[in-house]
Length: 327
Image (tube, rainbow, N blue to C red; front, side, top):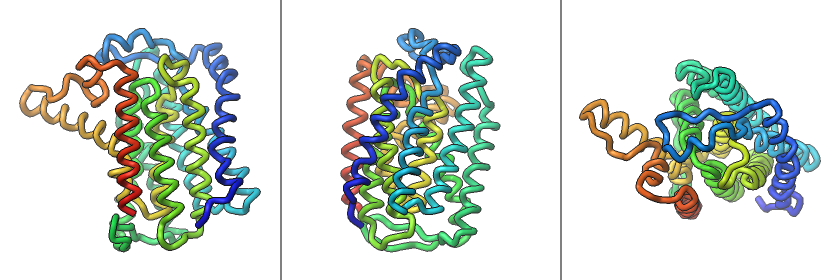
């Protein structure tokens, strides 16, 4: 598949739309006092961020989906599978929005319970899996390097739900520093767009998937205009859950689920740091890291917030290159 000129403009248009909409949207959030509560056990330097508007994830989701829908409709590439991924993105965004809203309403950093949030994520993932089963998507995944396909049979569907929930939570854990999640996700979306564009054996939703991914790249970059340090707005769970669902859903359409591991190395490392920290403390009473997720460990080690973010960008970009080489 080749990238047409109109499609190549998609990230620019979605980025500009996010930037233009950002000012009025942030003003709206401030007017209605949609400010973020900061967890008390977090780094002391973060307490000054209390009150920063949250739910900014809509500044990514809305422009990205709007441009992808309009571009797909005009070019005739708006496949039903891509529409299904968009629906999943909105479902996860709603779960995140509800969590953000409850945090603001309760005036503490506790929204939905862990069980409620996970239940919603599993339900949304299961509905997506049910759609794919109905549509005849198949149960094969691509093996890196070999280009071979491996058929998982019925096991594919529960694994798909696991991929959706684990990816969304990994992005959610990464969203802890100004610009960190948006920037690393822009890199990951760009890497996945290249993989989908060059995957051997075209699939019906290929063009529409690339357009959606490029729209997400642009929207993330536009959001960074306001989210880079010092952040004027946070994406909140609204954004982090939606972005995780977006990259997982697009990877599923391209049968590239296994490629998410190296491509999302930053998110994997953040998640593993939390798992290791909890496991170590419960079994030995000792902590491996000064604080988890991993980005807080580096903060407490003396790195400036911007330095942590920049280094994570570099790791994300390097792993995107490595992942591309695995295709």
